[in-house]
Length: 300
Image (cartoon, rainbow, N blue to C red; front, side):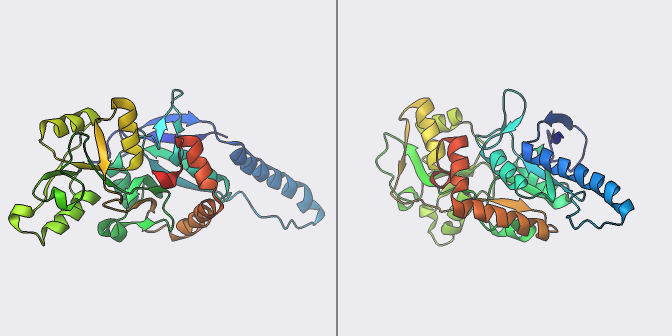
């Protein structure tokens, strides 16, 4: 049986079904087995009830549809050449869906803000797009017990700069805090500014820049530094050479990405957590990430 995914081009102006399109993707063998078992159970009931027999099998006809909001334009979740959802996050979700026969996941793509709005409105039961934890999000959503992606951040500067090796060296300088106000790194720097004199305060800016725009800003001096995970840094080096470097032995901010749930989905979260925690403990999640990304999710 085929499962659905939908794409919401813009959810930032409100939660609406307008503008969505439908696409089909093949469900894995586990899902087909789930539906086959359901049909078999119904057939068995039809045969045995007339003879007064009672079946003790679990009624698998009550499968709950779970709506999952995911991204579609990153290395972790994207549309492949066939127009199907693929990537590490999708592979992880498929493994969890396979282990939970009482649920069937249906996917809808959106952007970072749209997924959060969808969760708040009850349009999505689950949302993931490399969401890190912060106080505001913790108030509005349930978080998975385990993180599924390391998101430690390091200072990133031009390779030719030798004057910046720590956060202290960035005091009084211009730092890209993230793509939008409220981004984790920018928030951290703004909090540090509360205890710094004016001439030492970090000049935090927010902008959604392409890699080319970021490199140009670093080169022309409009930005002194940004932050990056190891994986994003490796990708820049592969594409552009040794233009930038990471400085400092330790990350300036330690973090993980988590799966988010609608506040009313406590039971779903508990069931999801049980499987995700097992994937982490058994090392299976590492295997999934290495296959999808080429590296362990703990080394992102």
